[in-house]
Image 1: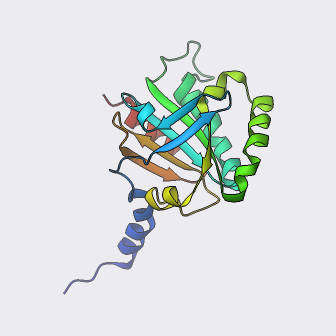
Image 2 (image 1 turned 30 degrees about the vertical axis):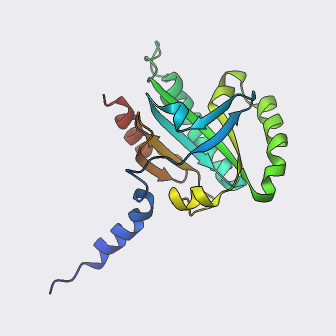
Length: 183
């Protein structure tokens, strides 16, 4: 009988939770942007690949800021300091979703007002607020680390093709860009 090397087992069990949801359809989520426009995810996303960044705690929302800054430049505007002419934007949906659940739902209106006040109006359509239960999303999307933002790439039919969590990294963004650039 062969034994599995301990290092291999650790690698598999370390990455298994973040990969568990890949291949499943993103669960239904009713949101609205800060301008009051409602979205039904993933239904309203079908036809385009989508990048969804979710956070359900204050610390996760702080880490989400790195994803927002990078995504606006790399995915939405596709500009860089090195290029004089911005690249053609990807034909995708990209949303940053602040989740207000449980007692925190009471803070959603205040957060919405802060977003309107402090965030460029051009970014308002990309910021969604979710008010509701958390358990469905925690279990279906394997969102077990409360203080991490979660990033999902969906195919044109709403199926999850990539998932990661934690602070922004260039490596993760490169993987995301590779996936959304595929035809």
